[in-house]
Length: 164
Length: 421
Image (cartoon, rainbow over all chains, first blue to last red; front, side, top):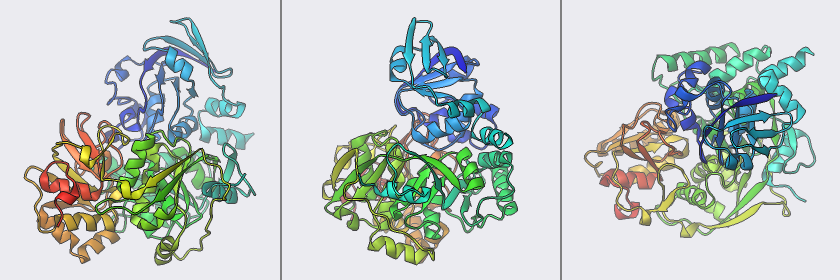
């Protein structure tokens, strides 16, 4: 499992209200949510983001509401992985449950700047910054979590397990 | 090594003698909660699992409270999905308009949560029930779906922080000021992944309403849960509201805490969180001159009867300042009725308040009180993030019902002591 794309960089305490404002929560259609992803913190994000790109942020990413619409919007916008120093705990669970890869790595957050091209290997936890020629090491996912993410989240993973 | 109160509850629900911080466990659930925003996503996921019904019709609660009464066609469609699911699966605790309330005030009031329970809810403020000595925490829609299907969920056992409360609150200082003070001290990620356990002789000085407010905002410090010991007040509350049996858990004397903070209740001043994070706190003495366009009193944090009483006591016989919009929304129908019987609604409406049916609406910028560009509100709610109550360039200041009511009279953030009596 790998990801490669350009980085979008944010600071600490990026909350779920700026990831997907509540005024758009009258739908749970991922494509519709993706149109407004990060709107209140970075109005350029949806115009610039391309499939495979990364979000890199400092501490407590995804704090606030339990709305699963937040990781859903990010995933549907085409983001391949979110790297942060720390994640708020409900966002952390929700991201993995819907199959959005996330990694905690302060070193990568310090090194990566907006626009850097970054490659991530989820099996080893290696993060390579092609633009800067740097490498950072995150804790890789355990095997079951890699399976869960590859399956597309908790529910497809449960269904796969039931079928085998 | 002993266990914290939270760890004891989790151990019992996972069938273990002992658990340790960091351990992954599978726990049995006493209640699974969702609302009109999070349940539609959960229902879609639930259908994919391929089970016929929910694990226990009496242990699922669905409360359409966020965009209700339906704010637009899309919201109405979402509520319809939730209503149909509740009917089809014969969910016993589905609360329709007319009998509903804001979920975190409603569930304790209906006796659906008792001490020692493990509760998950697809709403971050599910941590409110820690006031009753239960373990409760917010999760997302997928976890709600799996919880409804299996009656279980996995947890990483949290480490804990202890908050030892001493002394007695001064007049016009409430649970809201206590939790804003604590969040200001430790930061919005100060308790990340951990339990906040409140102990000490100061606990007995706090009303149940104050405890619900404090536990409610544990999430705003990043905590997994906030929890209070069970005392005479808790038992009296539970006996009044529930027929269910309950279990009292106590932390071991040698339980391990990552940090211990002593909070002298008598030293806490009315406290206000400035935009745009709940930890950006100032005491009322440090606020300066902040004029407001709107005052909101209500929510799962501060829409209980004690909160409405405080607001009415300050506003009775007074008038809301010209140019200020005061919106009061009680958290449940029962609280609404109580406020009506006590003459609180009359006092507030005569003062110039708009008195609303229970809804989460304004708190999350849904409906019933959205802010325009550049507008500023004082709210007794729980979040003041960018755009939380409306336009991304509006501002929310978090405060207690007493500060909010005093502010409604003057039009600027005001110490309640200066307008009372």
